[in-house]
Image 1 (tube, rainbow over the protein chains, first blue to last red):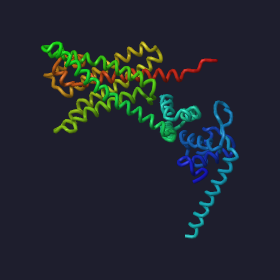
Image 2: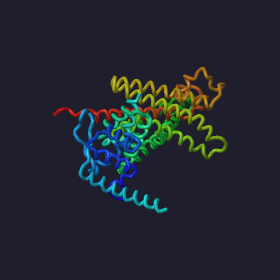
Image 3: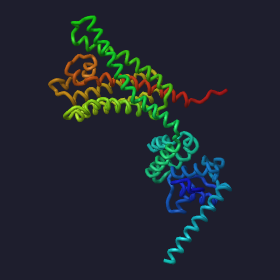
Length: 104
Length: 287
């Protein structure tokens, strides 16, 4: 395993956080709102910050100075590369699955 | 209420994670539209983080602390048996015709040096170990060990010895542990607000109440009203400790003395750990 898949149960929330931050810096509450719109399910605070910690440790995201007592996070270049690789992998898996379904 | 729950959930996280993200997690929990779900989510994540932060030295330290809490009642019980033996031999040597009551009083007095020993161990441990939630963990661990010590011989006895022990000793130890947890938590709170002397008084009164309740529970479960009139229930603990009532002394067995020693140990240890925690949490003086 490599990249985001090594984050275990936090790998799916991690992808959603990276996608959320691809649209610009956000703090935790805004990320929850954005992910709820995106995936139809709102991540809990524990799940969200468990994934944020792991992403920050790997240098995929970084914290910005606090604004209005909230700390926003932004995507780093390494995070952008990891997200691109993960989305391409997901696209390849999805297109293979769809092709097989169409052929069946 | 929610604030208290949030603090309790954050306490599940390792300190480093709490310091780094605690305020942000607390903010989301405070603004949550589904607080129950989010508190459970944060608690689960906190435990995951805590498990992930465990290292071999942490595990070894935790095992050592648990081991010491298990050894303490066994060691205090052994010291008590030795002290009682010395007292009985001494009374028999000095005055072979001493009345039975005098022998019992000497046995109870023999608990004093063991109580001093319990206090000394607790102070020593309070300087060297770290126990999570000591006001809860220490009485619970000691209570479980005392019960295991009582159940040990009962397992090999015929009949309903195990259920008898569970009914009398089990309920008494559970009552003692619950009352002592309440006492230790209250003493910690009083220490913060009113100082060590007030906390000491709370601990002494609370321990006495815990011992009274445990002895009453034990005697109620093991003796009928003919041998132990219920109207004198409040006197059963002093009677059992001082050997003033043969029926009560026999029914209570060594439990009141063991619980007294463990109460001294628990309250001194929790106070020492609370003092140490307060010292660590105090801000550094300006240079």
